[in-house]
Length: 156
Image (cartoon, rainbow, N blue to C red):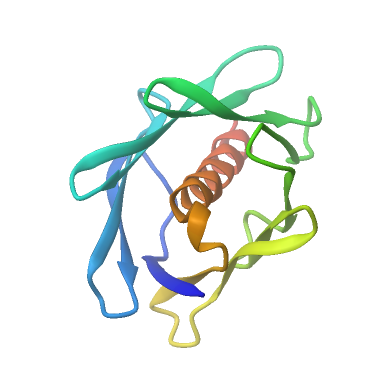
């Protein structure tokens, strides 16, 4: 099991969010820009994944690696209820819990692969990554779900 820590903050406008390991070292950096509708995950200053918000009848968020769409997150409903369908050929994924609460899980075929839980010291939000083979994809999926919920709740 791998543990990462994040500052407690929403993804807003243009900002960087460091993803720290249990030794306090920066492992990943998430850069977000609400103006471009894009979030990008970096490791050692190299871009790993991007996620673009696509406007349409129902908003969609596409996760890309090397320019190729590998996952789409689509709104299940048109109005009010913020729930998403995760479509990818990397397996069957779904989430449990509230994307606005400080605690939710990402499951793959009913197996826990990522969990966000409150930090008892209330400084960080702790991420517990179970599947080491998909760490980077799962981090990007988590950030994209949180960003989608934040955008949809604000009505942007």
